[in-house]
Length: 497
Image (cartoon, rainbow, N blue to C red; front, side):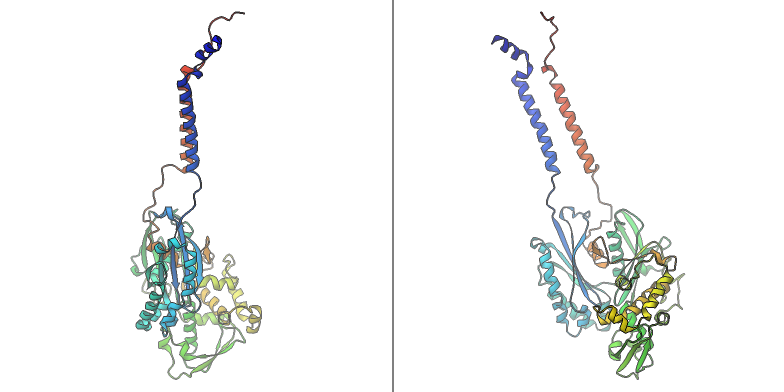
């Protein structure tokens, strides 16, 4: 017994103080590991939401966006989670029955109510932006335009979102916000990369926006927009051509062919065999062509097709004015445009038309694209109908014109050449979000893109964990070393054998 007691007294690990220090050290290490694990444990993500209604000339579309709630300080990536196309025409079509404009939005808005979590409803901003269709109606009948907006306003306030009002976007805003959307989704703004130009084609207007190194805004200030985004300055050239969306451009080409008031026209922009009786009053009821209506015109005319791409292109060219330019260089109608620069994203009707025609691959030489379109236009109408039985009659009949108009607008209007045409990419969406002005509009109004680059932590997460681990190991080693006085001592006495 006395021998065991002596061994315990000589062994420092049997001392109470040593035991306490050891236990505390072990607890400290376990606590450090536990904190590190809990710190990096995946948390359930919380999101905020925004809703934008795009009230275009031909239809209205609703988009729902979301972003991480804990990154609301200008660093959270905004993504589209849902879209809904409103049934019926654009709200500008309800000028004679404005109440129906508000009612038409109900179904898509009810979808939004179910898509956005209920606890987020009251803080979710809701915007409605109207574009060229309402711009034209406002020019034609401002009283009717106001009544449509009043009906839309009343309808949207019935829903549990933070409605921010409905208004008409200027053409410059539409072009600039489209440019923001395209470059935001492609991460070019955050990373300070060369930006993409934006080409937008709607039913009533078309926009071109791009950054040019040789344009400082001095030659045509009305086409200049300055942005400071993520710490970088952008001097953007942008212009919107009202009446040069594909639907209004078609009206202008038909007005060009009916200016003498004929009872029938043979239109090269429509397929051979196509024939339909149309009313003069409906053709000329737009401000884009109302002043051109022939005085002695009959009530109707027979619209027949001929299917000739090259003749169609000549008619399309007639709606552009290339004779006047007071600047160093112009696109058309006397509008200044600097030299094209960089890649371009072409969206909205650009994509839908060229995708239908299977011409979105711009690696195909431009001349070959024209040949393919010429072949399509020359296809008889009966064959086209059999080939595409599920496509709506109106759209199917107009694809030859729309494709010809797009190529003419790009090459003759905006000055794309065989060399620069491959720089165009026809896009519907980028990383799951639709290309268009709506996202850029919401980002601007919610200040989701900072003027300066967001602050970042001094160390990346992995570096932080590494440093914590090294410090923990160092503390553990120091703790062991501090226990040195209590380590067992080797006996120096000679052993008795």
